[in-house]
Length: 356
Ligand SMILES: Nc1ncnc2c1ncn2[C@@H]1O[C@H](COP(=O)(O)OP(=O)(O)OP(=O)(O)O)[C@@H](O)[C@H]1O
Ligand SMILES: [Mg+2]
Image (cartoon, rainbow, N blue to C red):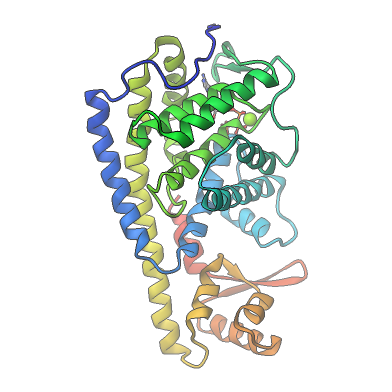
């Protein structure tokens, strides 16, 4: 057990070691490639939305909230019958979108925004921890590894210090290195009773956007953390017990490199699928083809009659006939869930699902 008090930022060690700088170059290269490609895509919403669904699923899985794509799809389409787990995953996705919109609008990441995001994930307004007694335990042995900062005042002071570190860039350290520092610090402050991991993982992606490393939130570390979970906890702890920043920073930078390469692959595949389907619909259903229709079909994994009706400003009857034609030609698969008929874009759905 270690009772060391959490230090304010910045860390008082040299962060930019030789090994770190080497891995930093690799991470930056992979990230720049992803950003460059994503910037050329006209309808970014499609990508963001598709990638976010896997992130919501992965990040929630770290917390042991396990759902399937099928279940999540029900929760997202607001059809009845979704499991509580799927609804929680859907809340994570809502929190992510909301956080992204806030960062775009405000160009800052503030304590209040973080509280708002956690409130959406947890669907409560408990806010910052007020009662003592929350500790971090070793997942395996149950032993207490760290006694958390106590009391709202102390937690708020630490969060203010973190907020400055995030937004002010007074130290001229590369943002990717700072991201590792921010994640460690946020998790160690552990400002909430629950949801700190998920909130921290959302802050990661918002930080990329804030620092213009990405325009769209399409890079997530959750899948990497799942794969390297034991190291994740161990290295967080080693920052505290051994002041071992280097290993922790290398862990995060490697994660950025790996996930950026994976994200680029997925994003390219999604984009190719949009184009293939566009060409095929143009060819097979020239009378109903429009750019707006394609956008609507890829807007989510599914569409509904009223989405087409409103999105294309057509009558309900026309919307139904469009959807029927699309289904006949195999572009959509419909299913009645509850009272509504949901039309699934199966190709997009399968593509995103297979990526897992
Ligand atoms: N030794 C440690 N030092 C700092 N942070 C830690 C340590 N052990 C765990 N954590 C952080 O605490 C998070 C878990 O906190 P909490 O249960 O509040 O979040 P969650 O979102 O509900 O869970 P999870 O992260 O498992 O999905 C972990 O994801 C990790 O980031
Ligand atoms: Mg938890």
